[in-house]
Amino acid sequence: MNTSSLPDRMQIIEINQPGGPEQLVLSQRPVPRPAAGYLLVRVAAAGINRPDVLQRQGNYPPPAGASDIPGLEIAGEVVAVGEGVRRYTPGARVCALIAGGGYAEYCVVHETNALPVPGSLSWNEADAIPETFFTVWTNVF
Image 1 (tube, rainbow, N blue to C red):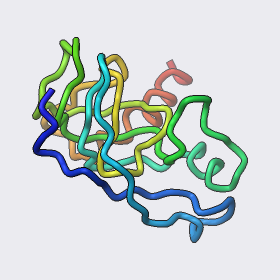
Image 2 (image 1 turned 30 degrees about the vertical axis):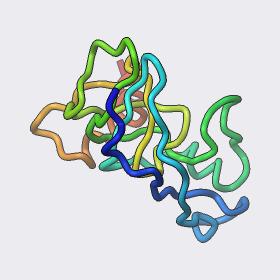
Image 3 (image 1 turned 90 degrees about the horizontal axis):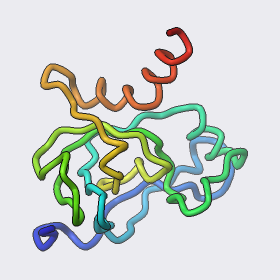
Image 4 (image 1 turned 180 degrees about the horizontal axis):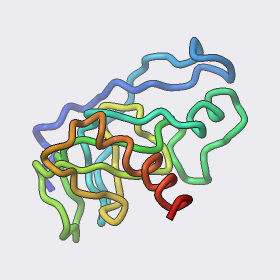
């Protein structure tokens, strides 16, 4: 994994306190580094879903061990991989379902939770696949 070309800090959106959209504030945190089995994705688009709204309102705490940064689905480019990653290499276009952390410039994703993005899809279309599309698909079919 070569992360030497990555910045040390990134911009994120965090929840200042429970409430309305005005409680989402721009902040900075260190850029995460991918552990074994994980990808580091430069986020190009992040979905906004009901759990994100509930979390912002204080009614949906992040799961134990998950990031407190909101955002459950993302699309973007792999920029680094952790030890043992076999499915993706830097430069791959992916979308992913995550337990949190999508409202950030960079996000770590376990390689098994990432899917390749077909070249015909925009980032905004791809970021709606993991949570929204698959939820509908599963419930309909």
